[in-house]
Amino acid sequence: MKALLILGVAIASNCFAQNLEGYYTYSKGVYNIEDGFILQGSTDYGGIQPNYLIDLSSDKAVREFLQYSRELRHLPVDERVALVGDYVKNALPHGEYDSAPYLEALEEYRNKGKAIPLKEYLRCEAGVCRENSLFTHLGLKEAGVDNRYVYAQVEQIVNGKSYVEDHAFVVMERNGELYTVDPYNSNFDQHRLKDVLGKELEIGKGMAVKIRKINDYPNLYIPPEKFHPRLLTLKNPCQILFKPAAANIDELMTKTLILQGMF
Image 1 (cartoon, rainbow, N blue to C red):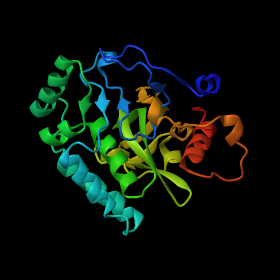
Image 2: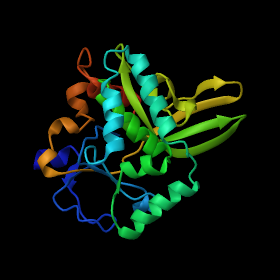
Image 3: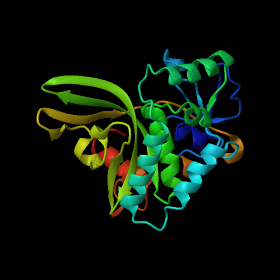
């Protein structure tokens, strides 16, 4: 257990009136999410989003999405990424925080004091950056594209004016480099991570984007029967920085964050 605590894992306690006793809590802002996990929503921070229940088997619509993603594995990686992103955008057309279907679904589960299953977002056809990135992350994994769900503080600069917010997106590996994938906000889609991590990247006249930092929230709650150290995505920097080459996306992600002073 001591080793787990060093890696940022602890036993979960009270969270949004749910009993998460026995779950492992991981809080690094970069996540490999699997069936049965619970991802912390924004209600613990005064927001409107309940915790997310990652239930991939009990709903037909979710199973159909995952099956569609699996059937893309024979295609080139870039096509798989594009098709999964298109599916997610079409499945969640109501992308505004104040859209009625979105608010109604969130209110229902807040009133119940329960985590909201992913199927509810497909039912109401609504979702913002967190939900779009969750489905993209899970769909790309089924399509055979290793990737991670990332929650960060980002900045968009428009004609000299800065807009800062928390934002969810996905990071994938392509030809030994990390790239962002973001079906929700095209300004953060398909950039080399090192080009936007801690620095401004010009994306058009008078427009630039930047990832200011990787957040150490939301929490990811891992049930004990599903816990495995491989789910801890960011590694010990002392064991990774001087390796000659990254062995996988997690080591590459860790090395990139270390070099940018974000880990």
